[in-house]
Image 1 (tube, rainbow, N blue to C red):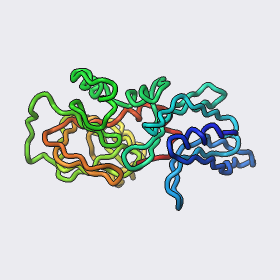
Image 2 (image 1 turned 60 degrees about the vertical axis):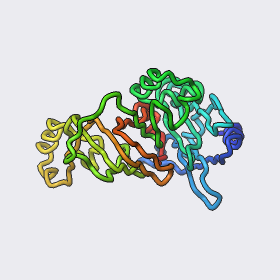
Image 3 (image 1 turned 90 degrees about the horizontal axis):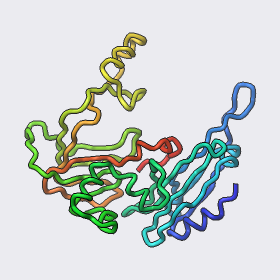
Image 4 (image 1 turned 30 degrees about the vertical axis):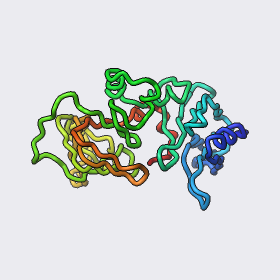
Length: 275
């Protein structure tokens, strides 16, 4: 697989790029199992670099195209074709404050700007439309419509929020399912949402009905370390928000907390990167 064009594209935004070939897994009869390709960010003594890795067969059948590049912004948008061209995945690669990142992009974006907008939740896009932000203003991390830190958006409220002080969580970590370094919020308040039971075997959570079904099939699961959580609650933050890869932000009033839309993209399965 020749990817010299990608090496030049990453060099143009100030990044390094490498291809890493790994041996594929074997079936019982000795035939190879294709593992597919994976995008990640590696580290060596020279710093960070972007990688695409996989077994020889997966890399030979995948095609990577540069859709768009913004050198001054240090971002580019990749299109990855696999499964004979039937599957098309988009990845936004770039630099955000202190670190390089990769994000799987939902939809059919063809430019860096479209990819950034596709990653914004509908509530964020509606807020920036109400405030009349132009494209340049909407592309900043701090504006009148929202604050952003990594994959998290903080949207100011139009009306004061009535909060029970006893329910405010102090120095609460927030992170997307699947891992990554958490963002630490000085004050967090959750309301509503669906009750789910979470375990390492079920990281996205089970509804009470699904939980009971699991216990019926596997009575020993009752002794597992389950956590009762709320899926899709209203989440609000106030005070400082800290993360080692980002500048600390301070929210002087309660803001709605929303994660980007990366979880909507099937391309997430080809990402090993977690910030």
